[in-house]
Image (cartoon, rainbow, N blue to C red; front, side, top):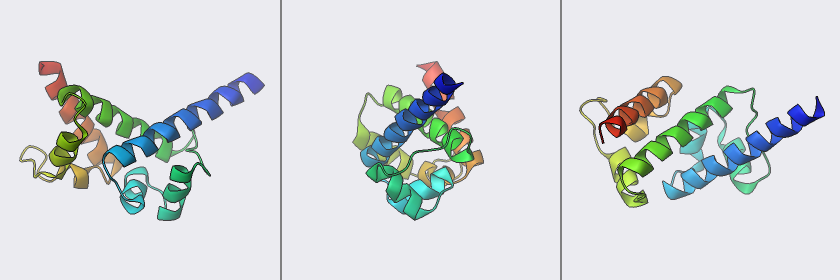
Length: 124
């Protein structure tokens, strides 16, 4: 039982680190990161400073997994070009009917943007 708890804690720390690094690469504010993860800005700030971690049993953890999936998909499509990823996120997308950065503020939007990127990634 203790081994399972340790593994869950490690998962939480790894995903939290990945999410905060993504926020840095994409220059997301704490407020924007909080919206994406469904947290308060203060909690997003604590995540970034290492004072908190995502709870593996929470919706925020699930949102973090989708954010990581989106990052990996864009990274593969755009050749690890963070500037290109930021521009893509900030540009109106006719298929998504919004800027992707705005769509990912909800869980449904985050999932749809992930699916969209995965679809194009599969074509490459």
